[in-house]
Amino acid sequence: MRTIQGVSVSAGIAIGTVRVLAAVDYAVERRLIDDPQAEMDRFRAARDTAVAQLKQLRDNVAAEFGENKAELFDAHRLMLQDPDYAECVEGLIAQDKVNAEFAVKSAAEQFAAMFAAMDSSTMQARAADVKDVSRRVMNVLQGKRDSTAQDGSVQGDAVQNGIVQNGIAQNGESHIIFAEDLAPSDTAQLDRAKVLGLVTAKGSANSHTAILARTMGLPAITGIGDAFDPADDGHVAVIDGTSGAVFVDPDEATLTEYRRRKAEAEEHLSLLRKLKGKPTETKSGQRVHLYANISRPSDVAAVLANDAEGIGLFRSEFLYLEREDWPTEEFQFDAYGQVAQEMGDRPVIIRTLDIGADKQVDYFNLGHEDNPALGYRAIRICLTRPEIFKVQLRALLRASAYGNIAIMLPMITSVQEVRDAKRILEEAKSELRGERIDFNESIQIGVMIETPASVIMADELAAEVDFFSIGTNDLTQYTLACDRQNPSLERFADPHSPAVLRMIQMTIEAAHRHGIWCGICGELGADLSLTDTFLRLGIDELSVSPTSVLPLRNVIRNH
Image (cartoon, rainbow, N blue to C red; front, side, top):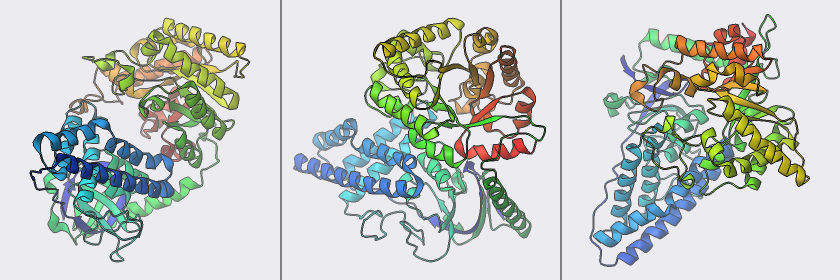
């Protein structure tokens, strides 16, 4: 037995035969050309074909996994249509008199290097995306047919050694796929019925490939590095997507143990399905509201499917991040109103825009900051640029006539910030009254507790608002003075730190002293090892990813 340790990116256990996906050689010949314009025309035609292929792939993914999971390929299309990308490719053709294939490969390497050099791990993961879309263009230029061809034929680089795409298998056996790396488009086309799990030498938990693996429910491990060995093809393996462990040629004891664990996990999943519709209540009668976090209206389907009692965090900044210009009041009203209507009477807590730090938007023109995590972000932008803030508040108020919406303010550090935000909210209410537009006059307003300052001022803040929601991601970062975007600080940024837990306790106690409720909407809310602690502290609400709702309900009901 050979044991390999990688990085978990999608939980679950897979047991089966390995199929190694051979590395694809993307080397292209550098040729000097006489007619740059003709070569540019070749590039543009190939790009248009690639965009059409991505549209087909997007529709295939949407049909199987839902619209929100298909948005990745909308982003891929936008990447291909980006003027900077085209300008780079065409500039190389014109200046260096090189063929389109070589220009595309060179442009991809430049953009990938730029993304890889960024501080944000999310942006670093985009390096794989630009390589993926560029490979697609190169395939078209080289006359290779795409595996998403509408005639149902299975072609392309990812179809090797019995790997399956578009639901067509080259043989009937299911496999665990080992590869140096997998592009998002390759992963999206794998047939879940024929693929048991994924193991790659490269990649990260933030990559779109990892996200797709989680969406598809495939156990996946990345980062095994030099332990990747093509000779493993055909061998039996066990992968533990929770711990990141890979066992090649497992001994009988390991095989028996993981078969037992897999059976238990399947039994547990069946149990969780039975919890839909059941109250989130401990055996002693302590009631906890269990909500879900979302980023866009299309996520509501997952919220309802997993039986969350409401939405505890709608990250409205994604309405800004996914556009190239300011979202209008009408655009935002449609988005918020859609969510409110779909959720019915269930609460929908919408966080006002939290732009800045690792969430940058070009059209905000925020400028460079040496320390953006401590910089011009979130409520600070809203209060200094009230014309932006009021557009959002008007949209939120208008949408409140269609459901149970509450407004939540991020990155609060003082009482004055809350009062200033409420003053602008009152101005928006006054305007809507003058325009005879309906809204909920008693709409609730809350604050995110995610700075030590807001914890210290919690008693005073509680007198100003209707609820608290603790953002444990930033609260951990600011309490422990550890940049959460810096992977080298991972061992120091311990969200279980007594300092962080004491901050949470102080916040809950202050809320209850003033008769308001307090929840947690950060990732710590889904940490089952802390559920008992949160219950003892008297937490009123937990808001987690939709897929974490039922496992958390199970733990609470058995407490």
